Structure formats: C-alpha cells, structure tokens
Image 1 (tube, helix red, strand yellow):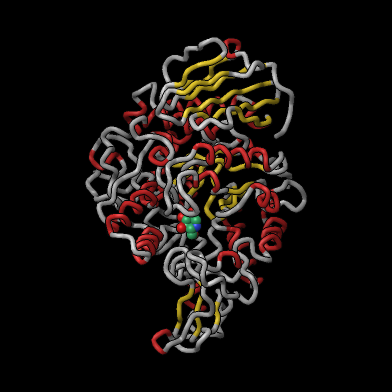
Image 2 (image 1 turned 45 degrees about the vertical axis):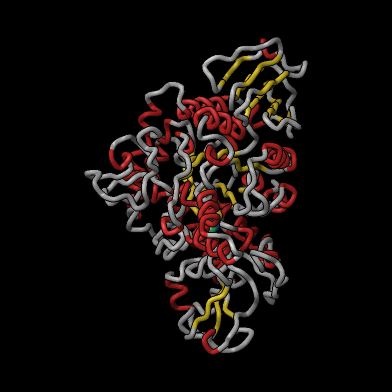
Length: 575
Ligand code: NOJ
C-alpha cells in the first residue's frame, strides 16, 4: 500500500470521551454526544479526531485499562454507533484515530482473568508473572520479584494466590503489563489493529509504546533512586524496535494509516530511532513531553514558575533536531496535563494568553493536536480535598508527598497544581444548567463536577464573540492549512534569549512566516531583523484588535501575538 503521509497536512482534535458531550442524558459523555458535535468539530477546520479509549473498561484509569479490545464501552455506545461516528466523520473530511493501549490491559480483561487462574492455561504467559524474591504471599513474608515502583500505585508487583506468583503493573494494580515477548500477544495486537483498520479507522495513537519491552531478568534498580524505580529497564527496552517494526511490516504497511506513539521521556535524537522516514520506520511521529515540563523540575510534582526559555528550547530542539528526517506531533494540552492557560499563560489574560499559546505551536512543523476545550480556553478547576479527585495517579502522588513529610495543606496545593482532573472536567458548551454537557432533559448529575466558571467560559459565548479564542483558533487553523510553508518550511528562532517573547520564522515554498508571541503580562518589544520588512508583510493574525508598528518594530501588549506573511520569499528548505 502506497503511504501518502496525509497526516502531514492534518490537524487533529482530541476527544476524551467521558467529558466531551453526553448524548443520552446519564451525565457521562458518549458517542451519541459526539455525533451531535461532528459539525462543530469540522467547523474548527481540523481534519481528524483522536479518540482517547472508547473500549469497555472498568475505568480504573478511564479507559486506559481495557477489558475488551474489540468493542465499545456500553456507557459510550455500541459498535453500531461508533460506525455512525466514523462515517459521519469521514463524510465531513475528518480522519479518525483510536487509542491503542497494549503495554497493559485491564485486570478485568478475559485474558488476565484466565492468566491469573493457574500457571497452565491458554493465557498463562500473556502477562509478566514471576516468583517472589522470598516465597509466599505478602502476609507470609513473601516479597516481590524486584524493587520497581509502579507509576500509579505503590510497588510495581501484585501477588496472585492462585499462581503463588506476582504480576507486573507499571501503572495501577488494575493495569497488568502484557508480555510482549510472547509471540501470541504480538499476534493479538496485530489482530486488534486490523479489526479497527478494516472497520475504517485511519490510525492509532499508541499509549506508552516505548515501554512494551522489558529487560530480561527484570533486575533490581538502584534502591536509592527516589521515584520511578525500574524505568530504565522498560523504557526503550531491548526488543521495542523489533516489535514495532513487526507491527508495521505485518499490518500497518497494508493501510494508508498513521501512528503517533506516546514517548514519555525522549529527546529528538532518540525519536529518530522510532520515526526516521525510511524502510525501517516504526512510527509516524511521537508525542514528546519535553516542552510540557517548563513549569516543573523533573516531574509534574516539583513546581517552578513557567520558564519560557525552557519551553522555547524544548520546542526548538525538536524542530531542528529531527533534521527533516522525521515528523513532529505538536500539542500543548491533553487529558494528562492541567489546562495550558492556567499553567503557562494567565487566567487574568485568559483569551490573550490562550491566543499566544496557540500561535506558539500551531505554526511549527508537524501535526498539531487540539484538546477538547482548549479552543475555548477552559481553565483549571479547584479541588477542596484530594478526595474530590477521580484520578488514580493523583492519589498516588498525594500519598507519596505525604510520606515525604509534606503537610496536608502543601500536598493539596500540589494536587491542585498538577492533577489530571483539570483537563477532565466536562466540556462547557453553554451557560445552561449542566453547561450543555448533560444530554437528555439535562437533569442528570455530570460524572465529574463542571468547572464553576462555565457561565462565562463556554462554546456558545465564544461563538457569539468575534474576538473569542475560539474564533482565533479557527482563523489560525485555517491559516496554517492554507500555507505550504508551515508544512515545508525551515525553522529559525529569533530573540532566543528573551524571557518574554517566543519568535520564530518559517521559510520555504516561496513564503516566509513570522510568528511573535508574548508569554508575559508585561509590555514587550520586538524589533524585526532587516530581512523582515514588517510594513511589507501581510498581518495574518493578531491577538488584539489592532497592530500598530513603530518603524520595523512593535510593542506587544500583555500576551499579544502576531503572525506576518511574505509571499514570493524564502528558499525551499527543510529544517
Ligand atoms: C498514558 C495515557 O495518556 C494516560 O492517560 C494513562 O494513564 C497512561 N498512559 C497509562 O495507560
């Protein structure tokens, strides 16, 4: 099959189904709700949808714990409704990609139920089972096979009496890791891929795909390591490339599809091992996390003020680091991070900073993803106690920092800064009770509390305001799609040392594009280099209603952004 690499011209919208739109009136987002919003999604100018997991799941990690890979969670609909969504999306020119979560399944998946029941059943070797270091159950003094930590819930091992063995779970206890070294498991992954591709989906976002191969022997990690003990033995493990190439060769190459792999700790240089275009290419692009840590040290849980230079450095290192040999996935929000305006922008300058943040990534080289609610500038919520969280990883982090000696007040402050709940509040469609999220007669309790700011921040209000962030996203996406330079052009950063401005030039395909974003609440000053004559350029976008110049320079008001275009300029080049 000829791969057209259509994804290079795509812009995706991410749906986290539980909170997108409730169609049947039970307070839980679902596919009936999505059906009713397909026109809205298309109106944004995006060309694809990424669905976070839609499969049956006990929802221990909101679908990232899959119980059945071949069906739809009954809370969200049926396969029939999914087919309608797929057709409706395709009719509107929207591609659809599914989340593929195969590092682990749910413990309620039939494979695991069988696997845990004995040491000799059809699925006995489908998960990572080991004898304890010291024999026996924990009550009898038995100890786990090694000292690894899970990322979501205490130690990485859980004891199973029926086998008198332990299973590995890098995430929560209800997310046992699949044994990808078993060829039958890999064959099953291929069956899953074909099932959805044959139905018509256009590709996959592959969850923590760099974790699927574990170092043989599963050795102990350094006991003094403060957190995530074991990661070095499963991130980029020994067979990861072999397995990904197998999936590409056996399945993906038969379809004109795309894959984006989630790669939690990866540099641009390392990404080339997975995504360099050529006969051995494994994935089409990767979600990096580097630029998402510009307001924290090491992990989301050690905060510092937003550092624009780190943000620019991270984005720039991928723009130049892939050297035109691999493609980027671009995002600033998803279901795993607090809202970007609350993190990197300013709630006091919500619309302005939302526009500037949009420009900071939408004109880079790569495929942009916009997360539900990002386009209307949804902001973080507030948790009065950790018990208000619905997120398994938040409970874990809270417990860890409490164990480290933090007071409850300080721990709660951290929860409010970092929890994934912020991104998971229901989408605010209108100022009606239930924020227009709740379907049916609108009286059901939403599954998670709606952010109390919904009377002000909602889609209907944004639709009525020509200067809204929503209008800006539409204009920015349309602009991006009409300019070949965004796909083809090189990348040059200006004012690199500035702690207020992110400014970059894209040049190529006969066009030159200048993007200047202030990420500061103070006035900033931008003077253009001599080769960019601002007065001769076309002002394509501005975060404010007017855009005065001072010679070949301008002052930027708080969080102002501007985009200028010159046609018939710029040599064809690849960064
Ligand atoms: C990454 C997903 O984005 C996140 O939501 C999930 O909790 C973990 N992988 C585990 O599947």
